[in-house]
Structure formats: C-alpha cells, structure tokens
Image (cartoon, rainbow, N blue to C red; front, side, top):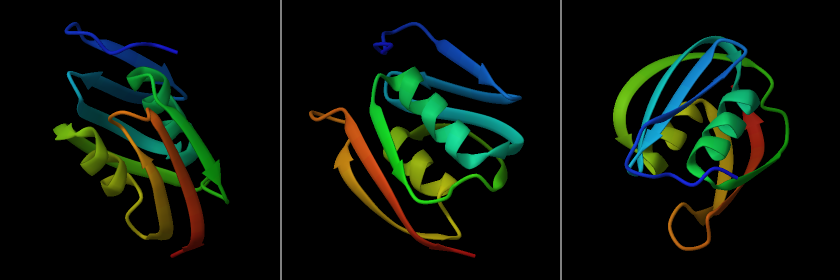
Length: 101
C-alpha cells in the first residue's frame, strides 16, 4: 500500500485520474468503472477498500481538493450503500451496495 505523504501521488487506471494529497481528494474520470476508481483511490491513500456488490457501472466526475470521505461519498451518489470503517485510524473502508439507480 502507498502511504500518503506531503508530496502529491497520482494513480492512472483506465483513464482515471485520482490524487490524494494530505487527506484531500482530487478526481477527474470519464466513463470509468466506479469500482476501479474507488480501488485506485484506496491504493493512492493507503486505505484498504473492500467493495461488496456491483459497482462496475461507468462514472464521470470531476472535483478537486475535497476531504477524502466527502469525495468518496460524492462518487457513490445515486447508489444505496452502507459505508463502514473510516479513513482515519482504521485505514479500512467497506462499501456494501444495496441498490443502484
């Protein structure tokens, strides 16, 4: 896993740009499977992300400098989900998809 430091690290996967800097998230993705985006963010932030359910639908989203938790929630808009864990001490997030719209 990658540890987040003061420098900016970027992950590019299937056209997805996700960067985490000092706990802040910047994303610019177009028609990229949401699960790939979330896993790239987890890798970037040094957080274990486990996804239960189908998040393979493509997502297009662009935002900059949001708190990590808020950015993940923004990407999950339109899905009914539960989120367990945190990006702080546990460094582990479990996303369970209940339904998607």
